[in-house]
Image (cartoon, rainbow, N blue to C red; front, side, top):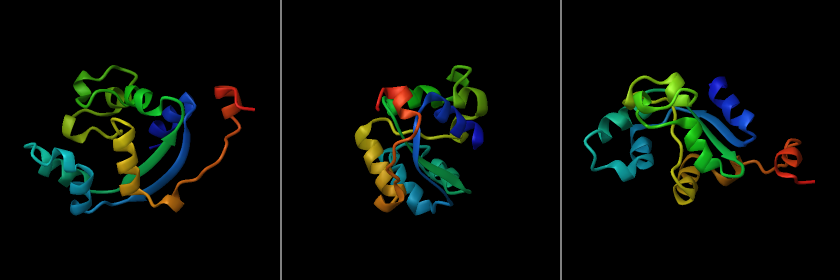
Length: 134
């Protein structure tokens, strides 16, 4: 967990929500609703609901686009070394991390995993150095 968190922190992204949960199978089906017709859907939902998940929300310039680069390709065997999946995952169905693929998906997934009151709004000390905010 700390390895994944540190990669986002080192990039300069800001953690605004985090919690440890064990999703139910029904919750997993909601999360992956767009994959319902795919042959791997049931197994994917079984895996997501098989144990604890550390759900997180990160903020920062380009966090979705660059965050997906940090994460790497869905298939760990096709992920570049230096990416989370390239370094820490082995099997495509057990790829260790999920990242939203766009702003609308992120909005929906955040709403599924977190209540609005669980999102923290703050200015980090690093922001003025990273973004030039004074």
